[in-house]
Image (tube, rainbow, N blue to C red; front, side):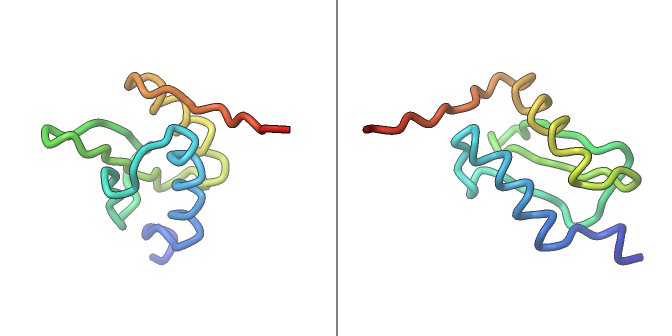
Length: 83
């Protein structure tokens, strides 16, 4: 049963991905219960909802999460270092 609920480490891994897109964490919702193959969509109120898959390990799904966020039109930020 525990595997059907996201963990704190799952949430932090998801934030690692969404942070690359500079998405405000207040604009993200992630239901605690894992469902299906996972999904990402923008709700009517502009909140990005991320549904974590139940049968795929989160670590294996993270690259797909990034792709789904890009498909919604978000642009991945690149970090530039000043020398």
